[in-house]
Length: 484
Image 1 (cartoon, rainbow, N blue to C red):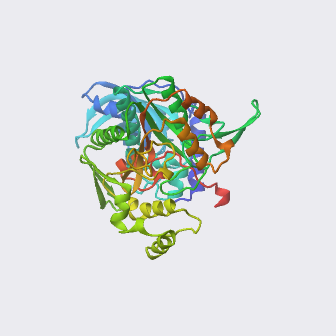
Image 2: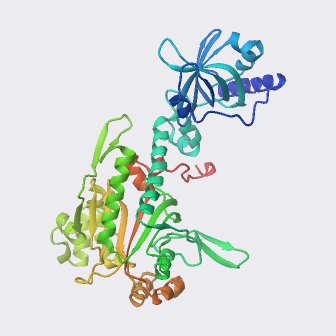
Image 3: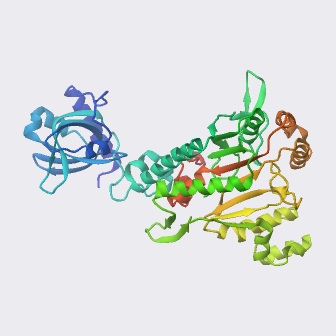
C-alpha cells in the first residue's frame, strides 16, 4: 500500500492536471433530480436524469467504467464509456478518485446483472477530494477518529448513518407528538444570571456590556414554570443544557433535553404521556417495541421490551427488595452494610445519599425493561410537590430503562414558601444562589402542574442500540490532542 504522503501528492498532481485542462476542481451549482435515494426511486428505463454525489466505488473495465455515486440517502451505479465521453471527457474522468464529488447527466438503463444504472452522457467535477477516504470494508474503526472526525465515520459506516437517521427522526417525531397534543414550543434563555432547575456545576462566562457574570443553563425548568404563571397551559422546549461535570459513557457536558409542563396535571398523567411517546417512537422509528442491543460482532446482548403497561414501584419498596430492613438500620449500620455490598460510600454522605447510591448500583443499573420508580425522598427532588400521605417523599417518578434514568416527572411544587425553604436548604443557606425572580413569580400564582424531562441523547441510545452517548452525538466533546 502506498504511504499516505504519496497518495496525497498524487491527488494534488491530478488537481493541477484538471486546472491545466481548464476545469474548476471546486465547482458550483449543479441542478439535480433530487437526492440519490430519490434518483434511484424514480428509475424509468430510458428516461433522462441528472444526479450528483460522492464517488464511493470504482470498477475499471478498460474503456467501460462502473462507479457508485453516493450521498447519505443511498447509492446509485453509474456507467461511463470512453467513446461517449470523448477523449477530453475521458481524460478528465481519469483524474478522479474515490471521494470526489461529481455531477452527471445521462439516461437510466438496466445492466445485464439487473442493476439500475445511469449511462453518463456528460460529467461535471464538483469537488476534488485531496485526501483518501477510509477503507470501504473496514470503515473508521479507531474510536478517536470516529468521534473527532465524525464526517469520515458517516461516510464510511452505514451503522453510524443509521443511528443518526434515527436520531433525526426521533427528534422530529417528538416535536410532532407534543404539538399534536396541544403543547406549544417555546425558547428560554441559555445564559442565566442564576443557574437553576437542577443540582449541577455550571459553566461560567462574563457579559461585557452588562458587566456581569452569567452561566450557561443547566436546565430550562425555572423559566418554563414562569410561563405557567403567565397562563400557558402546555409548554415544551427541546433545548441544549450544559453541565461542567465529568464525561462518561452516559454523560457529555453539552446535551439535549426535552422539558414539558402541563397545567392542572400531575406526575401520573405525565408518566402516561411519556409511556405513550416512547412507545410511539419505538414503533415509528424502530419498527416495534422490542429493541435489540448488539455487541461489536453483531450478537444480541440484551433485548428491551417496551410492551405496555410499564411496571411501577415505590422507591422505598425497591430498596427493601434488595436490602431487607434497610430503613430500620442506623446510619453507621447502613454504612457498614454498604461496605458488605462493595458500595463505595463517603463518610460525609447523608443517609438519603447512601440510599440513593444503593439504588443506583443495585436497582437502576440492573433494570433493563421500563420501570417507573415513584415517591422518591424529598431531599432528592426539591422542585416537586410533597406527597399528601407521607411528607418524607414527593410525588415524582423516575423512569429507568436499559440501566439508566431516561426521564424524571413531577407533580410540580407551586407553594412559594415551601419552594423557598427547599431551595435554601439545597443551597446550604447561600442566598445569592437563589433565583429570586423565580420565587417572586411563584408568589403571583403558578397553577398545579405536571412536568417532565427527557434526556434525548439517552433516549436515542436506548432506541438505537448504542452503548455510549458519544455514538449518538454528532460531535461529542473530546480532550484536546495536546493533552492526550
